[in-house]
Image (cartoon, rainbow, N blue to C red; front, top):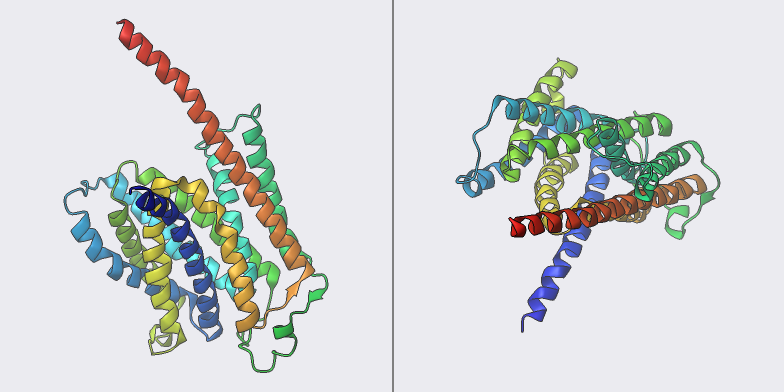
Length: 354
C-alpha cells in the first residue's frame, strides 16, 4: 500500500528538476525576445527583482514568522552583497551579453557555472582539494574542459548545419538580434561568462549566509528586495535623463519581466531548495545541459537560429566537462561519507567503554 506514495516521492525530484530546466529555457527565449524589442537590461533586472519580491514576500512573512532569526549586522551586509552580486551585476552582464549572441550559446555558456563555482570555492579554500584523490583530479580536469568548450563554442564557427525549418524561414522569423545591436559572439560570451562568475560567487556567499540566517524563503525575499533597491540606484545613474526605459505596457517586455520574477526567481528558487533537500546540489546541477538542448530546439523554430559545427562541438565539450566535475564532486562526497563512518563508530565505541 505504501509503495505507490514512495515511488511518487522518489520521482518528484526528477519532475522538479526537469520543470526548472524548462523554466530556465523559457526565460532565455523570452528575455532574448524582450532585449531584441529594445528593453533596457538595467530596468529588466529591476523589474524582475521587484516582481520576485512581491511574489515571495507574502509567503516569507506568513511561513517564516515563527522561525525567522534575528538579523545581525553581518547578515545584513551579506544580504546587501547578495543583492548586488546576482540581481544587479550578474543579471546586467548576462542580459547585456545576450544582446550580442544567440539563446543557444547563452544557455550553453551557463553550463560553466558549476565549474566556476568549484574554481572560486577552491581559490577561497572553501572547497578542499586533495591532489592524491581521483575525485579532485576529475573536478580540476572537468573545469578545464568546460572552460575550453566555452572558448571553442565562441571562437570556432565551422560549417552551418542546415535544419529543414531554418533553411527557408529567415524571411518571416523573429530576428535573432536587435537591429541596433551588432552581433559580437566573443564580447557576448565574455559578458555572459562574467555574469556566470558573479552567480558562482553569489551561490557560495548564499550558502555561507544560510549557516547563520537559516530561513531560505525570507533570505530570498530579502536579497530580491535589496537587489531591486540597488538596481534602481544603478539604473537611475546609468539611464539618467531617460524616463522611457521605465515605461510598461501590455507587450513582450512585460511578459519577460513577469516571467523572470515569478518563474526564474520565485518558482525556481523554491523548487531548487526542495530538490537539494533530498538530492543535493550535485543532482540539481547534473540536469543543467537539458536547458541548453531545449533552448537550441525552440530557438531554431522561433529565431531560425542556425547550428554550426563550432556551436555543436563546443556544447558537447561543455557537457562532457560538466559531467566530469559532477562525477568528481559526487565521488568526493561519497569518500567523505565513508571516511566519517569509522570515526563515528570509533567515538560510539569509546562512549560505550566509558
